[in-house]
Image (cartoon, rainbow, N blue to C red; front, side, top):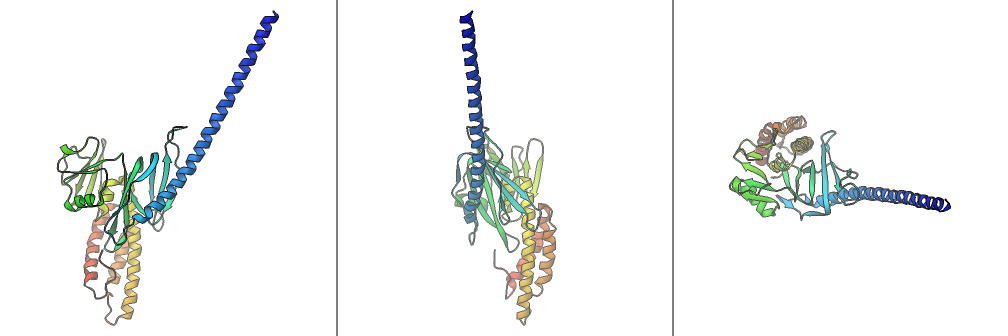
Length: 325
């Protein structure tokens, strides 16, 4: 009986040690996962700030277009693009989430970085290891801002029968993951087929340069947005919701610039005996009201007509308010 009792006590001791050991291991793993999770949030927050720094030199300046070397991350990364048109100029919110082997593959992104003077056109959630970015100036009729277009190594585009100016731009900038083809059959499997001047059933996007619209098709529905000038790139690469928000933000900026040029016209007119540019003030004021009231891209067509009229007058003035854009 004594031997059995000792055996029982021995077994109980081992069981207790195993339970305590398991709890210690569990707590250690839990603490490690929490620590890694916290570090990931901090790292993702830092990465978003670094992205802001990287994107600053992408602005075109006096160039017609500009691209940067691929932005590379050590592991698969998600960039979340959120846009709000509220306030004077709206805002762009960019946050980052990285994937790791320990803990959840994806967790909530880090603290977002806010942009008030940048306009990034992309998917709402862009995922990959490499991110490609290029910028183009947007003018209506004066330069309003640089628009930035972003996509990843996991997104491949096939431009079918692209206009010469777009095909030349793709080649000149060496834009990656964009194929130029003359037929749908030549497109790589899995690529997003962007068809110009054609609405074949297999096209994922239909671009109509005559109507200045881009239609994006999904399995359930299709969405159409309008564009002017270089906004064609934003219309192709961005989610429609992001695109429409960015258009509203750009129009807010367009309106404010119109008022600034109107004030400039007043100053010039006061100093010039010939009342140079005096008749532009009323047009600029009306244009500012139209731009500020823009709620969607469909309104761009009407603004474009007014823009062309003002630009023609500006070119013919002895003291133009803005240079050629």
